[in-house]
Length: 244
Ligand code: ZN
Image 1: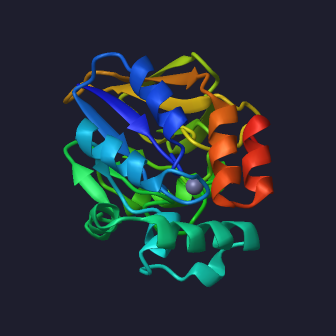
Image 2: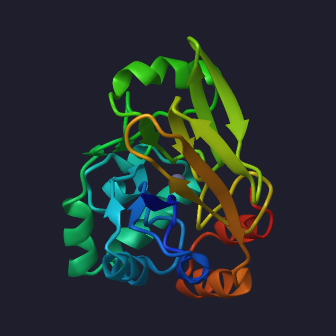
């Protein structure tokens, strides 16, 4: 089965549209939360995901935008963006996010925003944190986001290895249990401004899985212009140019 893995779109419609045009034929689209927050087009992004039939989970920004997660835990710029988003979302977007699970499980896949141990808040930023999380899901693969950095953590012979998701790389996962982060569509933070996503090829049973880390150029100027027009914090617009 071929799966498109998208995360942290953050209401950045030009980035999502660029990814959608770049997508090869896939069987499923999975979205790992933070669909809104930071960016200027939350309603349009959710409508686009609905049209794609995306299987999504709830992120911390999504939860805060609908009042289900405490917005006081955010830094000032992120909180201002959440307040703007909470005002901007329409009934469809609110209903969509209210129905999202924190953990989605289907066959060989588990999906969360942060980590299987703490789906809303934990950042998996090291081999040690990844290793501690393998006992918190029971599928072969677990998809996660939240850090905005593409990476795979494979559990091999009792150890965990980190494989950074370099643009265009195709990584053979074998049959190893893996925690996989596709990076961020709408606000990359690995120093590359292009939208990030991944294509996962899974094979049932004992065959091998593989993942391809992909990057797509998009119209960053357009997103930045829209952010300024609606009064989102300038720093949030500027960082998109640098992928930081
Ligand atoms: Zn995020």
